[in-house]
Image (cartoon, rainbow, N blue to C red; front, side):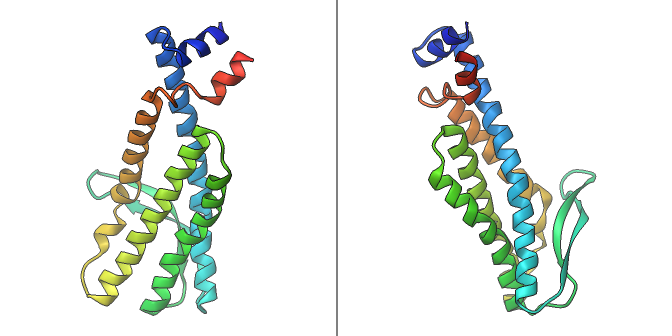
Length: 192
């Protein structure tokens, strides 16, 4: 039966079979994306901490509440917190260093990855890290360089909401692609 479903997904087949295979690909890639995001977040915050120490500061990793801007409530997030004041140049280096240090192993893995689920999950995480690089650097530039309010860049909805929406959109497009949606590892395991 598994071979029939796999072949149906590859060659047109029944719409229900294709939908099941595509849902499997979507879920497989989503789980992989989230696991990689967790690992990349740890490296990202650890990278901030390493750069804090490299520029002569002291810092610690803390779990801090993050108030939601548009919804009532808060979430908690891991954060590298400087314990000594940093000047704007040091802070810019810290803000750039965290996500860029985390992006390096993700980029190497993306270069080596073969399967579509792995490549999509790694590509999404690399994109998120580059997004964080831009908004974290922009925060320092706005606040220190121009004296403008940059607090909106720290909104949880922007930091997590926008990457989540982009991830879901990319995965939905990939799962409905006739070239990709049937290539789930789960489908290949079940068919052997």
